[in-house]
Amino acid sequence: MDVPEHLWRHPTAAALERIAVRFGFVTHPSLQDPEAEWADPERIDEFLAVYEAGELDEDERFVLMAVVLNSFEFADRRLAQWPQWPRTLQLLERDIATHLHSVLYFAGPGDCERDWRIGPELWAIARRNSTAFGYALPLDDESACLSPDRS
View 1 (spheres, rainbow, N blue to C red):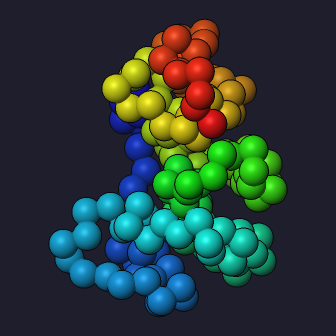
View 2: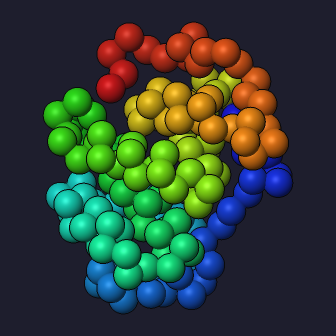
């Protein structure tokens, strides 16, 4: 699904730089998607601790949550095996105004070509919150796009 234009949000250069410095990430102009490049399932606890500490501004939280979501997406364990996953979902729901773009992007409703493993639970968050932001989801249920073993 394409995220509606009025809900687009992109990382700022300043937030990317501050997050890179804070976590020791490599940066260079050729990185097209640093949040995916920086994903590291082994550092999820560290990422969440910094996110929850309250020291980041909104742009930095946006970038860091994108790193966290990519870390879960690219992890080699099922989401149910991650005790940090429910905590992450709670943070997304709590800070939905900051993360609605990311939630809609990864939920992927209506786009079976982009079948993210974290999508079903983000779809549920999107469904609960999208009308508050002036957007009605195109489907009642994205399960038609899901493979039975996705998790």
